[in-house]
Picture 1 (cartoon, one colour):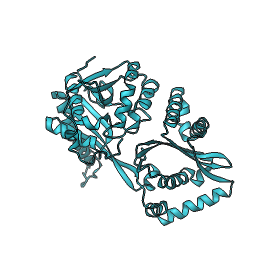
Picture 2 (cartoon, one colour):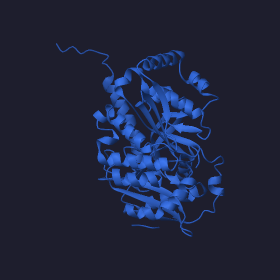
Picture 3 (tube, one colour):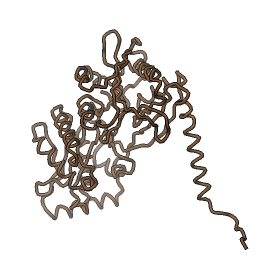
Picture 4 (tube, helix red, strand yellow):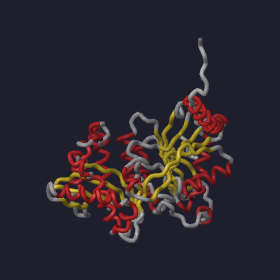
Length: 403
């Protein structure tokens, strides 16, 4: 073992990355026994409050339960970056060790992305961001058995990516953006009505209103939200039952399909509620939930974590109707300036939310020749692969007489 809140775009002046600190010397602590992380929880909480970018999935109250419940069979460690003088925690990098990068026989580190983690941007202290990234890159260079570092699933339009790119350029490190895509992001307009009129076509809006009318003909429809004095246990159990009864349950992807996953969800949901960071909304038919949405609130922003609906009412699109209700409720919450959908590009929410945020995966050579060679070869192999596929699909332009 070696020792050596902000919004999406949180720092208005990128020069603050350097000017706000005195370039303090840093040390690195690698944690493989996750019980040891308890010693850093208070410092971790402070770091999350001062982080360059928000990521609740890497905060202590979400990451530590995930490591215990979802990390079995995976080679994991958490790299902490601290100031040498005061021991102030400045960075948290949860890493997975892989002996192969994709199908290549090259060992690599990657930011840990468990099955319920839609964002892997590390938590780093805004006032010490440059030194923190430099210390982490120095540590990577010392791990000579690992040629690559995959900064996967990070925010591609925020200050972390910008600063990482800056530090890699100054070091002359080989890097490659392996993946880049956008996903839906909500930002409010003047009113919910104006938002819906701008985001949804008149035909689609008319169709949704028709479905809501027809749904109301089957019983009493109401939308509600879990309040600070509400019964969180009941809401959590309702969500679990709703999700497992859907296609997610049939495919084994619902939380309740595995005890460890269920326990993880219950633990983080209750903790989010206790912290005042849980937003749960529901559409109910005669008092029973037919759609529920689970979101996490952070300082000035939010993350849409999960949604579930009763497939017996699929013809009425209850999930979409609840998303429309969610848009209205978000417009009544001035404390929430944006909400990340955390959704795949093909998710239906992309038709309702107009804004986008960029997600990138950046592959970095840790400094050795093998890593640099892989980073250089991947674009070449991709171009060759595309050319070969195009050649094989191209129809023949001549016929040969075999007589």
